[in-house]
Structures are given as C-alpha cells and as structure tokens.
Length: 132
Length: 132
DNA sequence: TAACACTATGTAATAATATAACATTTACAA
DNA sequence: TTGTAAATGTTATATTATTACATAGTGTTA
Image 1 (cartoon, rainbow over the protein chains, first blue to last red):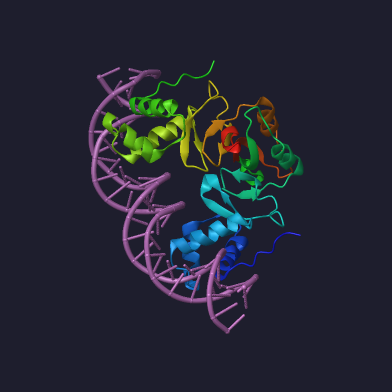
Image 2 (cartoon, rainbow over the protein chains, first blue to last red; image 1 turned 30 degrees about the horizontal axis):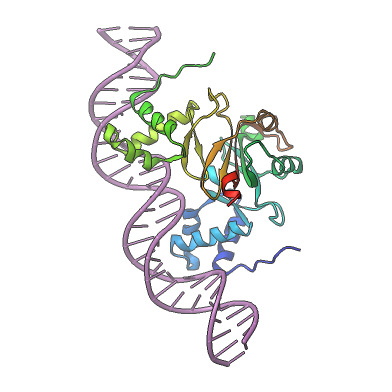
C-alpha cells in the first residue's frame, strides 16, 4: 500500500489540468491556464509542479521543459521513467515496458556508481508522422 | 571514415573550453569564460553549442542544462547517449557500454514508433560520495 | 485546546536560460 | 567570380526558473 497524497488546492488545480491535457504542458502555459482560478504567479506553479514530480503524479520531459501526468497507475516508477517523443508532431507518451525497466533498473557498470534513478527519452517518428 | 568537421573560430573556442572542463558547463558560464576572446553575446555561444551538438562533438545534459565533450572518440553515437550523474557532487560522465547501447538502439515496442535516437540519464551516488 | 512543526500559499523582484530579427562577413565550390 | 551556405555580430526580447520574505492552513501531540 502506497502513501496517499492529498493534494492541496493549487496542486490539485494544476494536476487536473496536466492530467486532462493530451500533450505535455509547459510551466507558463499552465500559469496562463490557471490564472482564472487564482493562481497568479510563476512560483505558485513551480511549487506545485515540484511537489507533483516529487510524489510521482507527473513527470518532467527534460528535453522539452514540459510536464505530463504519470501514466503508470500509481507512479511507483517515478524513479524509472521512459518516454517516446515524436520529433515531428511532438507527441509524447510514457513507455511502460517491464523488460526495459528491469534492464535499466538493474544496470550496473564498472564505475562503482550506484544508480537509483534514471530517465530515458526516445526520439523518432510516430506511426502517423512516419506515414506522411 | 567519418566526415571531418572543421570547426569555425567560435566553435573551436567553445569546444576547447568544454573539452578541457572536468565538469559540464552551462551556456552563460561559457559566455563569461570566452568574453576575453571576443565572444560577447549569448547567441554566439548558443549557435556554436547547437552546431557542436549537431555534429556530436558535445552533448547536452538535459537535466542540468549543461554541456560536456563527447567521450566516445568519434561521436558516432551522438544519437545514442547515456550519462551517469552523481546527485551529490554533480559529477557527470558519459557511459560507454556496448551492451546497453545495443539494447537501447534495438528497442522497439508496440507503439509502432520508429526510434532513431535516445538519451538516457542515470542518477545516483558516485563511489566517492557513497562512502562519505 | 494550546503549542508546535510542517506544509502550503501569496507577492514582488530578479536570475538564468534561450531565441527572434536583421545586417554583414567568410568559406568554398561551381 | 559569382553564387550559396555557413558563420558572425549586435540588439532586443522571450522563456524558464528561483530568491527572499511574509502569512496562512493542517495535522500532530502534550
């Protein structure tokens, strides 16, 4: 049983927006979208984003500075994230592949480094864009 | 035989700086460091960085907005990058592991997406920081 | 319930990262 | 030697993110 996180007001507003979005959202685009709900300043957005990332409800797509909701039901794998990104239409989706996550979670090399987290971004053309 | 890229003046100045640095460098830190060599504006730095990334001489560490020189002799793998990042001392090094790169380059799932590039960042504690 | 710690919020200012637009120059192949 | 692509120079501005400080809410626990 994992910890229940009761989202605060701002966290909930921002999570709902991201969760409903079919595409990753950028911080300032979030800001513009929630101003009618009383969230007026960048910091309010960034604080909520930080928390949501921390508890695994959303992930940051580093190469795009954008955020998407976790697709993997309970975010246990927020320390092991993989995404596919279409370089044409910019569609992003979270990859949920147990072989891949096992392989990467168990990866070790000669560096003596202990890895406890990874983030992987694949780039390419999605089905639609490929056939254009 | 791979293509020879003759770096331009600005590209060379900036590559040399990054190549000599033991740690990833950020764009504005690069800017401050090369002002004495006549590079005065952010755009001059970003243009050189873009080109150097494009030809694989350097890589961008997305989670850090910083740049490091390619460690893999000829940068053939600039479309297949993997890094280990120490979350304590922020040391970054490029992972050169043929099994890993083969595994990821050949990765395919049911999405129908054709992947032609990936970037992987591992996080953890390096040997030194682990033993502290 | 009072005291405490912790989390979240509000607000203003500013720092850090990156790009647009336009003019000019250089490299070099046709 | 002319055409073209790449690179440069410069100013302004857009985008992304944080610092600093004050206040308010939430949930223990004494």
